[in-house]
Length: 214
Length: 214
DNA sequence: GATATTTTTTAGGTTTGCCTAAATTTATTT
DNA sequence: AAATAAATTTAGGCAAACCTAAAAAATATC
Image 1 (cartoon, each protein chain N blue to C red):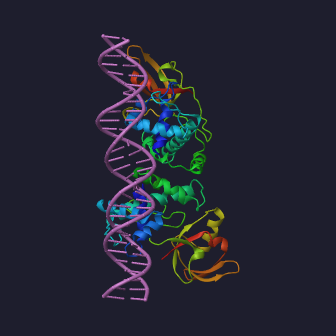
Image 2 (cartoon, rainbow over the protein chains, first blue to last red):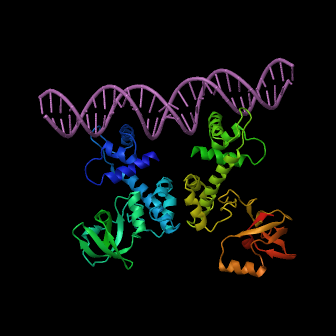
Image 3 (tube, chains in turn yellow, cyan, blue, purple):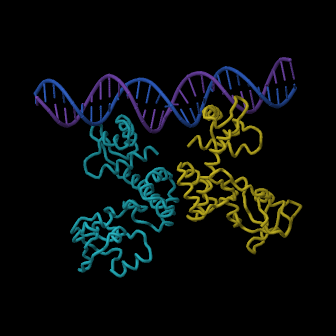
């Protein structure tokens, strides 16, 4: 359980191709650096991580596989919670955080089937399949979307409580179709059309919204 | 998590009105008696159990409430697994054993709603509601009902068009009181009394009718 | 009712995952 | 390159939940 959280978090941190550092991971997991070192030693003996003292670490192929399996569970549960149980998309993460640790391959594969093999979770993140493969999705930042070109919201970066709440308030949801009508160079804010509503959204918000050409 | 397993297991053991003993619980939990003593001391300080050294123990009202909440979760998940994910009824327990420890009241209440507030799990055990109330007695298959013991029809499995039509024709409805008068070993058909009518029903039909002792 | 047997508890140990504080290594300044 | 600062590791502890072995209490047997 604790181990699973480590693997998952390392996976998310190692997108850049440098090693993940002890402090970085400690920050994300809200644990002390000494605890990270402890666990890295353990995960190294299990060959899930290629830790070398003072040099940081990355997942081994086995570690990556394990991490993707956890992420698969997490995102399938998120999809289930939003789609079937009608949770708001900004409430699903917390609960999925617990459900993801239920380890039954049969459960997850049957859940996947029941949900009709969804490709993206409610945040727009791709859901790995049984083999760890997932859509790569050429998402672009909303700022890069040309005027009057319709696009679908497919990913929200930096999913802080406040951001999610704010989006919820503006009814900007994953899957929503957006058209940019005006760009204000002064502060880089945008005027967008969404469900026949005209909204102005700030540079800050724009930076966290990713879309795919629809 | 471990604590929850203790509470749940004590609940099941204390049906008789004697105290539950250390050895009994150790047996069920596959733990050593010494471990039970440890935990009973802990649960006593939390006022979940009224343990006295050498005298066994029972749940306090608070402990019972906690246990019922865990049993509620367990049985709702079992129902979900069988009904929605199409698990066999004899495979659900193991997985539910893990799911039951996910603690989100909102999750369970929404799941309950999604499942349309089922009253019995796939084993025929009653599912407690939010307040811990549940139907008394266990749902059993009509085939298991002893002769001359009145019971109420409470569940129809495998609700195919044909089956429902057939039941309708025979006026066998949910809530009807039934008494089994004769059992024919030859083809496992039954003669039952319903509203002062004597009916013979086939093995096939019997298998889909579940009743509760009235 | 004394003794033997069973049950339960106590005492002390193990593992896991976390912690603090001190030591060590690496990185940054000057 | 030496000194300082930052990052990381080591060493030693703590709590939870389990364990074994010995001691104590309750129960059964003669």
